[in-house]
Length: 129
Figure 1 (cartoon, rainbow, N blue to C red):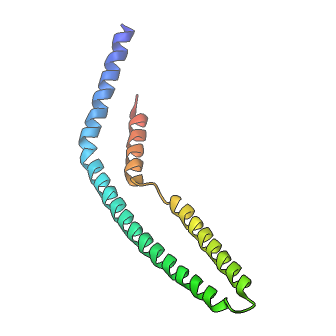
Figure 2 (figure 1 turned 180 degrees about the horizontal axis):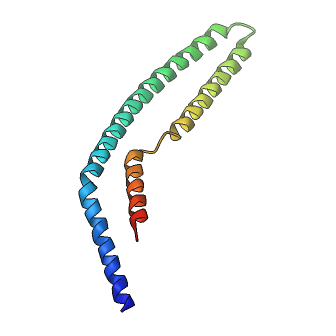
Figure 3 (figure 1 turned 90 degrees about the horizontal axis):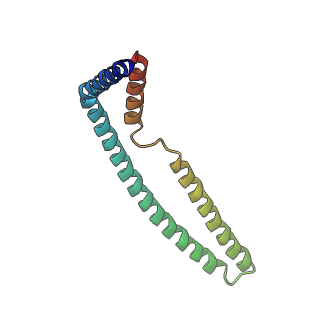
């Protein structure tokens, strides 16, 4: 008889959880939709900005490098200029890696949705008899 009571309690709990989800699903969908729109907007903005900035920056630095080398070619500073250009490219590469590393530490997408679900699951667990 204890097994039957335990099964009935589990069935009631499952019914309450499903009822809770059914009642709160519109809120979940609104938050999910908002997070999805925010994620899309951020992804488009950052991608466009990154591509335009990277292409323009690389073209500028490439032409600057050539100009520096051509300007210093007939001088005693030819080797210094060549190594200076190389060091400049190394600096740009390191700055790019630092930027990429910082970008990877951005908040996870759909964090609001995950927090909402976690909060509701904790509320369900606290309400458990």
